[in-house]
Length: 512
Image 1 (cartoon, rainbow, N blue to C red):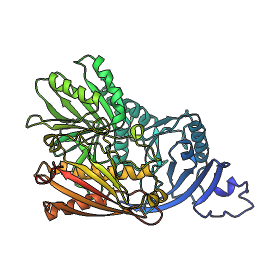
Image 2 (tube, one colour; image 1 turned 90 degrees about the vertical axis):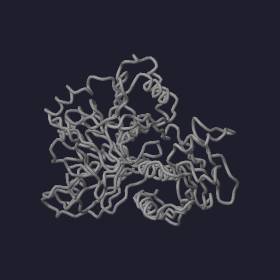
Image 3 (cartoon, rainbow, N blue to C red; image 1 turned 180 degrees about the vertical axis):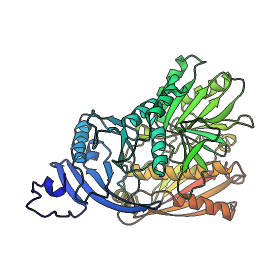
Image 4 (cartoon, rainbow, N blue to C red; image 1 turned 45 degrees about the horizontal axis):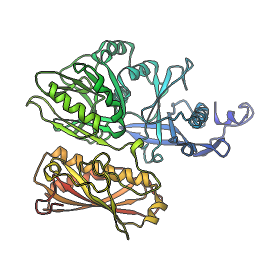
């Protein structure tokens, strides 16, 4: 239905009026609004025009704001935007009021009539992406429509596999954030039949939201949310000879992504972000095959597998149950393995306080501008009064924050940003630093000071200093990686903080 038709204006009597975007429509008085924007941008030589629908009001019920982007067909006018997303938003609000909330990785299933087209029988929700020069609201979720076959494949082999196939189909990493209603399915019936007969369908599967698996410098890196520990208590009751498959989300630290192939091939297929080097490759699952003669990690299909001895499996199970990190070295032909943990929504600090939780096996301190030092808590490791880890354990961590200093006044910070968003970004910056030095390989320890200034338009400026001084090329590479981070949204002013990090145990002459 066209814009002029939705107003009840018969087309035979009135000339079409081109709407002025963005539009604002009240869907539920005092509760829910919808904004409709028109985006035009070029991507990989293609001109894309799409309508983006955005909710305003879901957040007050604890539901992330949602986006639905629909690519405009050449035959359509800008006023021909569909009405269905508006009714969809009202249904989402109703479910959120009943406690049924959509999160990253959630999947909705529609009736036979579908949504926006009868061929789209489901929808998945991923972190929103930049469209041209437009940045989506913080923590909003993009709605990705799924065909019946894509929906079935997501339920069988995980959503990450399907997103990678969509990315390969449209040549966009990790996957397009807009919906082309005229596109073909990325999963054919033949592909679905092959997936149904594959080893994944025959194994016990555990879907863990907010988990990610990738490889960097021949190390399989599995990152788990702390809240997943209770899932792994079931491992103690499982047959020790039984394999286990963990379906994961897309590892957002990665610049490339394995893609499932219909025909088995020796060389894996991957899609890569524009200009990226493929340093870190994400997978869609992590498989454990216990009680083997040797320990070895490998790529299999579009995921990673760990073939391990009984004693190695026992140690890994203990780490999964306790939420503790671990690292295994394997034979020369395979991959090493690393397990790390991160904070997720269920274990995050209260947004009413400015607290920084850093997931390291050590403790440090946090300082606020104009105030005394406060405790830097490390969940599951360092509570109040806990001793720091031995220096031998510290040196096995690529980088950890000894101290975080908020240079801006706390009152200014509260005015500009929600503390939860600042907390998440500081943790992300530390993850980027840790991942950078992890991929470089172990080296002589040193101390690193990182100064960050968050500016409007999701920009951040970084400066570094180190003792001993690190190589200029290494410093430049680190700053390049940090420049790719999306800072949280602030409308005005600036927020400054410092991170004091120990890289590979820190400077030998400055042990804290």
